[in-house]
Image 1 (cartoon, rainbow, N blue to C red):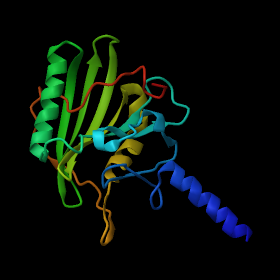
Image 2 (cartoon, one colour; image 1 turned 180 degrees about the horizontal axis):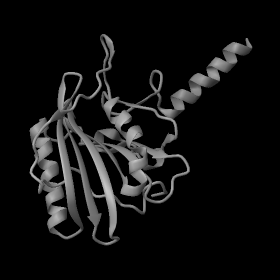
Image 3 (spheres, helix red, strand yellow; image 1 turned 90 degrees about the vertical axis):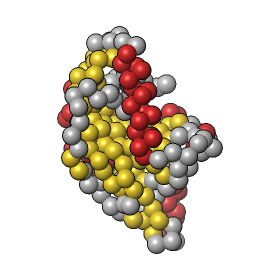
Image 4 (spheres, rainbow, N blue to C red; image 1 turned 120 degrees about the vertical axis):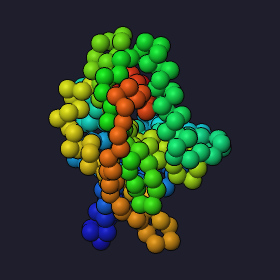
Length: 219
C-alpha cells in the first residue's frame, strides 16, 4: 500500500509540472514536447492561460536565476489566425526584427542560420547576437522556427551573452531534443539535424529582442 501511495504522489507531481513521459514538458495547444534538463524549471506565471490565442505557451528558466539569465520560450501563433507555412513564418519574423533594428532598439552584430528538421517537418534554426541600444548589453538568441498544424511555433533560447554561453551545451540539448508526438504510433523522437545554409552577414534576427528586466525574474 505504501508503494502505491508513493507512486500516486510522484505521478501527481509530474502532472502538475506539465511533464509527459520521462523528462519532457508538453506544450499546451500544440503537439510539441520540450526536454527537461537539470537546473531548469517551468515558469507558469509567464505562460498564457489560453494557448489557442497565441503567445508564450511554455517558459523554462534557470533555478535561482539572476537578471539576464537564459530562458527558453515556446511562442505560438494564434490558432484561429491565417494558416502559414515555414517560409512565410520565417519571412514574417525577419520583417519584425528588421523593423526593430531600423528603429534603433538594437544593433545586430552576427547571425548564423541552418535549415533543420524535426521528424518530418522542416524548420529553421537561427543564432543571432545583438546589442540592446538602451542598456548596451550583449544578448544571444537561438531560435528554432517550425510550423505545426498551420501555426507558426518559435522555440527561442535567449539571455545575456556572458550568462548563456556557459550553458550552450544545455541549450543545444534542449533544442535538438524537441519532438513531435504522433498519437497513433506514440512519440516520434527525431533529433534536429542541422544543414548548413549560407547566410548574408546583414540577415536580420528572427525573434523579438529580450527584455532583460524579466529574464529569470518576475513579470
